Image (tube, rainbow, N blue to C red):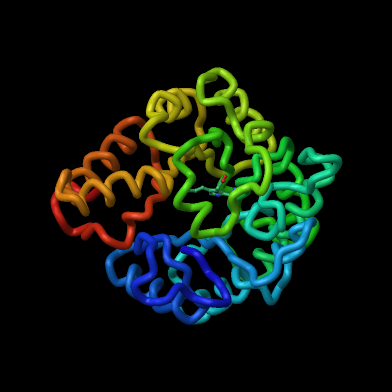
Length: 291
Ligand code: PBG
């Protein structure tokens, strides 16, 4: 869910699950999906003001901390995850601090730690670092422990590929890079062994769940991860995967429900224990096949 100070207008040219909502609108949406059986939500924030450092990410009055507090107050049973990245908060749209035209991995780490602590303070159950900086899991784990949040877990975007499927997300989050691309920190999709090495590093650094992202084009990586690691494996069916089905269904070319369910079943069959999907609030879990 995308939390912003200003919501999209009704009828905005955006897919329903990618709509920007205010804190109040987010709480209403949580109530709606909770009634449908959804037990966890992942939050992304869209700040009003961006700067080179991405300092809005750790502002306790930013959209994400405010939404976490409001959700926890009204819906304490819902597990709240907060994405930890700087790209929504930097004016250049990169996931880290830029020095001399390049993303500086090590200068970014303290900001990620600080952001995770701000979300833990607000009441997040898990944080989900997605910046793909080396050692982000270790940095966040120790920042959380030092701040007194040893029970806040980490869902690590461990194998996150530099993908053509993030377009609708970047549009919703306003986080497309202003120059260059993310290939220096996200992974080369031709390289499966590197993906497994990234997963192993995050496991060693203290991740509680390991995520592969995107999902459907990477079923082989999900299957390999399930074989190799004991941790729960998560898979993120990203915005472009969702948009493909929605767009084809809108033209009458695909049966939306059938196609969505088949992809989710495939991701599960490949070995994902947890699936993050924009269809979560839409598919009726009581229907046959949904689980
Ligand atoms: C932030 C982030 C991205 C996504 C999740 N966290 C965008 C990106 O890496 O550009 C993409 C999710 C989606 O496409 O649904 N770094």
